[in-house]
Length: 441
Image (cartoon, rainbow, N blue to C red; front, top):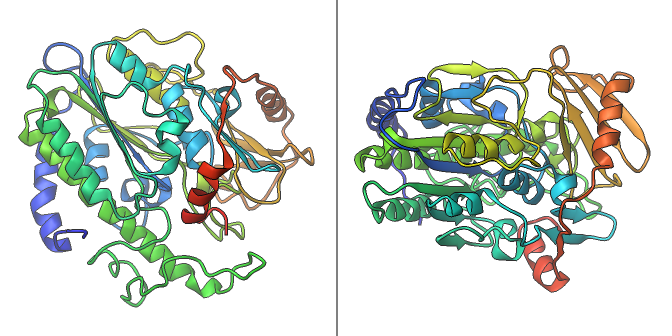
């Protein structure tokens, strides 16, 4: 059973506590020694539905406070539009073509990370950190290699509605640590993923007529896969925003507990997403089908010792940058062969960030390259590409002719060799969970 405070009590009691906890951040590291790390990955969270990213609704007061006391990157680029390849990029510092985890769409075969692939968790464990993970989706299970490097590892196949329980487990784990013990805590929260069914009062907070899920928490589709009722849009968006607000409340409990335990002064908190979600912007819903901004523009927020307070960076950054940023901050050697960079060093405004790896749809496969203001999406099956000016056309509605420089980068990226052979998962393990998660019918 999900438990939540009323909206008014939540805002009144929690916000001052968060502000007090997080406002202590400075440009330099506080205290002695290396920081501990909390990495939070929120499933299906598009950046433009967070209030700190300019959204019209107040969906994320806890994350807004975190961003205000730390650094927010406005141009976060996800390396894929679904969980497995995106989270693999977070944990390896490599793009999907290089780490190899994902799905071969024509055959439906699913590949996990090679178990010899170094991960952020194995680096942290090797450096003497106490490590814990609390994950909420099949794609982050041991079959895919994500358990490696964690002293404590918990993962459920379908974590819908489990944000509260997961934060409880994380808080209990933090309470078990020695006061001066360095730790790396990784949390994955699934709740914003469909079905959109947040608990009260968040189920009615943003819906057009104050109605809850009422069994109407997913898109209704025809047997042919078409949208049966486009009129669901405003209702489902409201429920989705309610899921974000519910998840944000649970993160507020985690942040408050860090302060209560006296860990906040030496802990860096980083929050991001694996991918976003489509709400008919290009005629589609869900994710994993395209590489438009609604699925690849992800939030990236960081606060704590060594992180500049009150900053907004508009340099292009990616999920591949999370591993080297954390390792550098913890004074751990960064592998030379990764693709990411340290976000806390001088940002490179001329970067070209790739994305690829879909898991559904008619396209043979897609890849994109995002630069500071321009983005190219290329179809490997048809060799068709379109360029978009993200400044003048942020909704990617007016395709431009292919940009030759971006096209050259995407072709180079597509030819990148896989670093280590990925592991093929057997159908009997994958198909039932794919059906339960709604990826296949």
